[in-house]
Length: 476
Image (cartoon, rainbow, N blue to C red; front, side, top):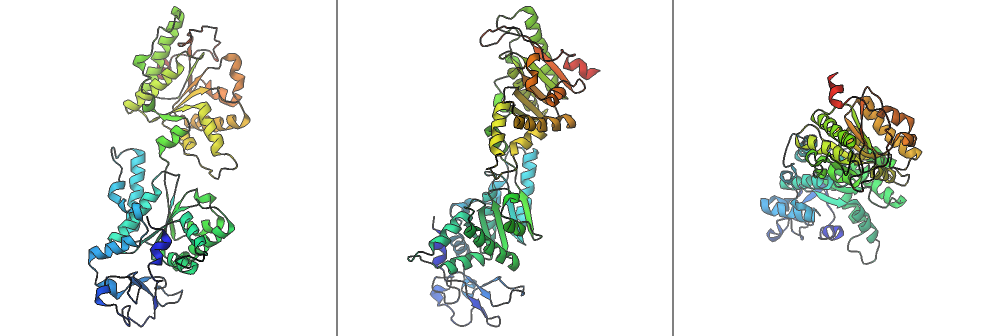
């Protein structure tokens, strides 16, 4: 792929022509160079010029087709626009390839199609700025490229620039051997009729870089030049001066949702299908050398979890010693509701989830929004595995309380597994323990059984008195 400076250096700087003079008057190109050729004395191969106008004039900064481009065939014009776009491998992206496959009625598909619809409207007639905000890997760059390619297909110029690369190119122009001067490079990007700035926020945030970006955006802001900006960090964390331009009245901000499966799995969160090996059919109610009374608790737990899976409501707390089958039953609930379309479950391993949150919300991390935490708060069914195995720090308890309190107040279906017994409940904050044991919303199911893996069969003290089964509670 060519460097930006190479693409722009093979073109003369854009020409400004007095308003009363036709774009092709005086110096009309030879017929052999009549297709936007490099030797065109009017536009220097760009295919367009700017009319001389004041800042307050509506035509200020607007490109006007050069006479040489008027003789181009459609194929030649498109080829020239693509060659000068700096899109490179991104030329393959178009709206047709971005539509979601599979089911179109899922929340994610509906949301994505809505974004595509707004982007299409902008591509057909760009007005103001379009700001694409959201986590990495959500398709912002692909969509920006698709819009630029649509503009080219319609016969209009578009320039695609990565912000870190642009700043590197600007620095390189200070070298004696540079093929293009700083002023030429900066002005050609600044005055582009349609500009895509990709990955704003990824650059080294030096005073020089921030100043150059502000000069660029401020000029385009006042000239009302069509601009797309994709952000590599949340809009709220961008430099304040840049933020004022990006969120101005002439800007439309499209907020992208995270790639849920990838983002959640990195945080110790899994969709129901991930744990498909753990099903109700594979749950052994005989245990490992379990006594008859212990086998009865396993059968009761299986019945209660099956009833919950068929109609999730309230909270279900599965308590028992390590290896007693709690995780298997919790995962079975998740798999059942996923397969039968009852709900969209999220299965969270609590210690891993908290490790992810610590990294995300660390003071050194500019990200203030976490997709995994928000997804856990609002999941139609949340399964929290191994509550109590985490480090009981004040910070961890606060995050868990925020999560559980939201779901408690909203009465969202939640499954919790814990190995804590009655003497260990003090490891949880009283506020969390109180909500887990609230008989109005929560059912506590005790598994008195040996460890399936080792056969350990020490006494386990229930964290709360066993309440009526989920099924009977739901019928009261």
